[in-house]
Image (cartoon, rainbow, N blue to C red; front, side, top):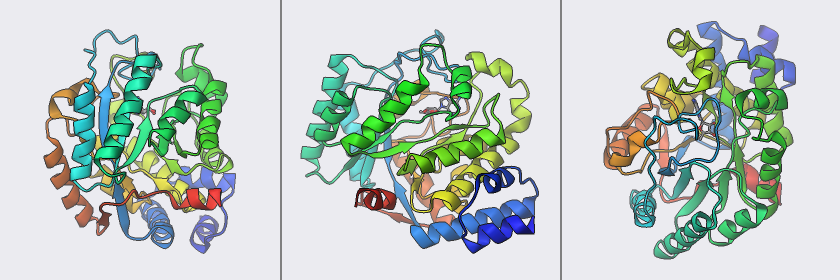
Length: 361
Ligand code: 5AD
C-alpha cells in the first residue's frame, strides 16, 4: 500500500497496475489520501479553478438503442421532445448571460440534413450574437467527418463523444450489434483531425465491467491524446434492458459514487492537464457529488440551462437532480457549493483544455 502511495505522491508516471490498485482501494483513509493527491495535481496544472459550461439538452429523440440509456429508441415509455431552434438559442444565450463563458448542446443522435443544418445555423447565429465570445461544445453523437467539419467551421470548437467502454468486447455487451465500436473510434479520430478539442469518457461501474477494464479506459484516454474527459458512474434506468443486470443497485449507490470518484482521481493523476468534468451522475448519487468530484481532481461542471419544462424528458437515468429548478436556481445552488468546496469559478472564459494546446503545438 505505501508503495502505491509513494508512486502517487511522488508524481511518478502511473503504470496500469497502479491504476488497478487505485481502483481497488476501499479504506476511507486511503480514499481521502488518494483524492488529496489528485487534488494537488489539479492545483498544479489547473489551479483552484472551476470552469462552467451551461448545458442545453436539445432533444431526447435518438436513433440509437444503447442498453443502459433511458432515452434509447426502444424505450416507448418516454415522451419525446425536441426544442425549437429559438428555445435552443435562448438556452445558449442564458449560459452567456450567466457569464459561464461556454455552453454545450447535447442531445440524442440524429443525422438527417434538417438537423445538421439547424445545428449549423444555430452555431452561426449564437457566435454572431455573442461576438464570438461564447465557446460552444457539441455532444451530438456519431456524424460523418464532413458534418463535424461543417459544425466546426460554423463555430463549435469542442466535441464530446464518449467511447462508453474502450474494451470492444464490453462495448458489444452494452450495445446492439449495429452499434459499431470501430465507427465510434473512427469518429473520435475524425474530431481530432478536424481540430476539435476532443472529449471522451466511459460508463463507470456498468454490469460486466472489471477494474482492469477501467484501468484500460484510462490508458485509452492517454493513448488517444484526449483533451477532455466526461465520465460518470452508471445509474440504473428501470425501463432499459440493463436494469435487470443490476438488481441490487439501490444498495450499491455508495460504491458507485466511490468508484466514480476513484476514476476521476486516477484520471487526474495519469493525465494531469486535461479538462475533467465532475458530472451530474455523481450528484445523482450524492447531493454533494459534484463538489466531491472537484476535490478528487475535477475542474469542470456543466450546469443545466435547459428550460425547466423540458428537463423531465431528458432522463438518461433516473434520479437525475435539478429537474424541478430553473437555470437561475441551478446557478445559485452551484455557486454556493463550489464556494463551499473552496474553489473559484472562472467566469467569461472558454476554459479550454491546457492539454489541447500542448497537443497542437
Ligand atoms: N447512467 C449513467 N450514464 C449514462 N449515460 C447514458 N445512460 C446512462 C446511465 N444509465 C451517459 C452515456 C452518454 C452520456 C450522454 O450519458 O455515457 O454518453
